[in-house]
Image 1 (cartoon, rainbow, N blue to C red):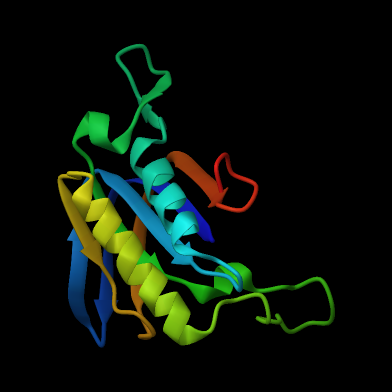
Image 2: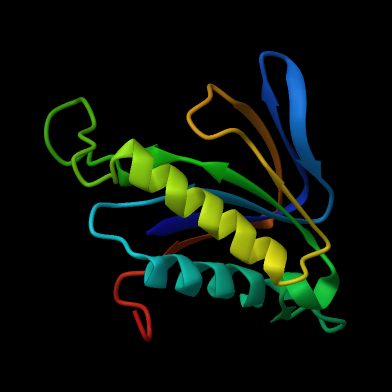
Length: 152
């Protein structure tokens, strides 16, 4: 499982010209599930995203988490995180989870984030053609992967 985590001053997602989710200060999380992922991967990644210390403290050091700063989260499903571009000119997606499993994991991830008492959790719509506005703060961006993570 992968999450591309971006620290933002604000972010939003629109479908067919309508804003369906927006946040202020917090994280935009682009979430992708891969073949072989399990609920254990979802739990690991949700805990990691909520507690990753990438917000600055009073000394300008990245020492605070989303929970510490009362930040918000915008979570967008993104199977293209599993695009393999090593061969040819067209990405292959054989490592991505099948859509039914991916949607299940996406919904679990969103619910786990909400259960962690994050100030506000907004989402896009699984499988939809979305337009995402991301005002990356820093810029600060990290790719998190559950495989190889402690306890997974």
